Length: 318
Image (cartoon, rainbow, N blue to C red; front, side, top):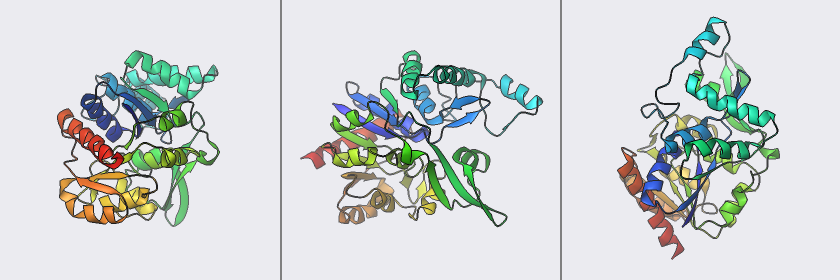
């Protein structure tokens, strides 16, 4: 079975770990979000790609869900002593090595897709990890500061500001001119199943779909497309997805996110059992829907979610 997953960071990575357990013999291609990428200290940092790579490769800090296990922060402390920031973004010493290698390879002329493949040769994540594009795309968020509207990088909004102010707009800068990375469109066209994990529908999956050609390829794919709600009981399981959903005019409910994707894009949608009353509304929108437990409490529970998504895909196919 060939499965394509459009994934962001923590939620997508943890779902992928369960999917890998549920179907160990499947050929899984992950199209990773690069809109969260940021340049820090002269280095190219790819948070979502690295979170997937570390999680599936056994190097993630499990409690945080991001960064390396056994991390130290001597370099960060030394940079702060020199007065070099930003201090709000915590790159660890082990993590720095990844970004140094990536930046050196990019500087030598290798595209991000080739660099990602080289980094994965060490981590062996058990999936094919592709960036959504080799081109530079950065998600920016418009906010109001003392009556003045300004745009900040998504990382500043999410990490530094902790989404403490309303997001007025979310813009994937550069996406309109980007091209899908090599292998992305072929993987989508050749998939048996396409999955949207419980990643942020605006700044993760939404940013991937903003790259010209990817949304169209997913919509035209012969494979069933099934998504899993990132919202349970009207709230994000992790993070602050409700803030960016509001910016694009979408209510923070499981059925509203399904309608946001639309029946032209997804064929099936899973909601948590606490949102079982949303099933009828989703199906009225032309999307097959089932209610199953969607809390990724451990790998077994996550594998069960993955199996439920694949089962719904088979129902839709039939």
